[in-house]
Image (cartoon, rainbow, N blue to C red):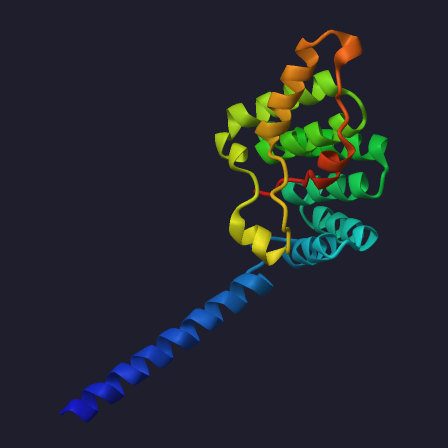
Length: 193
């Protein structure tokens, strides 16, 4: 009796594992075609995280060509352009992404980071404030698991950290302001949601 129960449970476990892996493959490969450009988008993310920004830009553009409403691909284009130091093109790309989904908090926060690096601190502050109103969880910053996975050893400043700093500095007389802090600005990472 015990051996029969063991065999039944073993087959149930194997069947569940096969179904789970099969479902994951179907979802990943988007067999049903529910998410056009999903594979290109994921390849773009991989390239972006590896620092291959030209390749990421190409993949994000392919994903957006497959689905013109894909705000994540549109925002990926903007982040890639930002990393490639093409600020004006990145700003236009952020605007295009936010035209798709105006309340995309991570996109607004990343646009704020770009504006900050461009020296448009008042506009950056407004973007940070708007992003935090839409998604207060952005104030948590990078999760420790992501920091572990991406080997980020120093906790990067959050949107809220930078917002508070800008508020403090903009309240000072202009000659006392320190709006650019190269080391911290270098650590500022784009947000993904």
